Length: 450
Image (cartoon, rainbow, N blue to C red; front, top):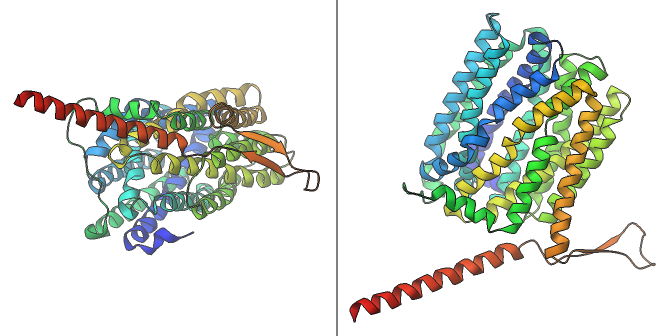
């Protein structure tokens, strides 16, 4: 389960990322609560707009960020994005502490943070491969998610308590300090033990090559579609929990932070379970989407704060199982030379849906109530599962049959031709194309000689 931690470089990275991620979750929690309760009068739509601006740049510059990640060495690029994010957090914390913050200022800084994050995300994802190599990549991706969600377990709870005691501005300023941990970790990495990927030189058509690669892999198209649907309308937990806490249960900032940490309990468990699997599979992504849908629906009708909190644990488990498995599936089935561009497209789809879904869910929460907004999230998970099942039935001979009478009624037999056939078919077509190109080049060379 913890194989990647055997390497010194990954241990250094893991420690630095954990500290930095705790600060990131502290800032997110404090910022969302500040917008909901201080800058507006419980306006969920304003929180949705803030999230949209923070994730919106991924829609525009995300694919180009992949080209940058395939060109610039990962350590250098990550150091630049970490410094940029620290400066933006410093500005946000100062305007809140000084009492001059207005909604438009928060919007503007959220947009700037979104730009830095859009460039940082594909570089961070592909750099993991340089830390551990291809063989341990699925395990490292899962442990990265475990680190991120362990931070999510700690950060929001601490932020909720400190927001009550010292205010949101000071919580955000603490996050500025945590960026130093990531910068120190990048500086301590042993260059000789890295697994550097060959970087692409400048050239035309590199972004189109990444898009063409994805569109010619039907399995990746299915994964991208699932991630888009759930990322757009399902993974807006800040809106769900903030509105349920404030409107449905009439609780405060500390309870909001507590619920974010409760989700992280399930998320850490999901990430660690994924780390145990040697290979990510499409069927796991599909089942996780279905489980997410079911527990979102259950949470939406919970009558008390305590029962709602309990329902969030399996939501976190299935959400992280789905997204971590999808991430690892895309990375491990993509050629290293083009991985940065493919991951940038993946993250554009995943993060870029938030600007669409967050304001919509905010309006649903305002007009119909927070429970209906969670119902939309449940429907998103169900839709994602239906997309995958429909594709597997039509192209992978998926069949589900009841077991014989002498076996338990709840056991089903699943017949499925496998997760890897699409990638194998694509690689075979590429090998045939390369062979044909080489043969044509040889014939042309012979013709020139004669």
